[in-house]
Length: 136
Image (cartoon, rainbow, N blue to C red):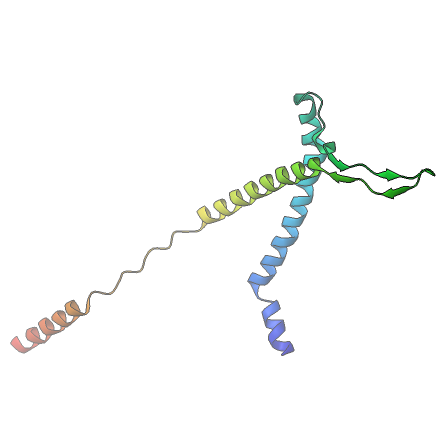
């Protein structure tokens, strides 16, 4: 069983897939850093100074007692993080689409193998060949 697992794990496709996951994860990290560190700050002045990465909506505020301790945390929807994640997803999906499209175009178009003639034609050719032998 160990030998069979080793053969399975060492197949080329499995290793290629593992490398693809690692590269995809690293690429997604780079895109996320780009979106949050470069793209959203550049977008803020265009949108009138709104910082999308800090955009949030408070559903219910935090409850603080008389001593200043928080007894109930605030319920906050962080829209900025969601917007950044959607933009990152779109960029990663587009890049993956372009990579796959490029790989598919590099593959050689396999020529279709000629199909076998219909059975009737094969039989007629055999009859013709037999008649030609008999005439000689």
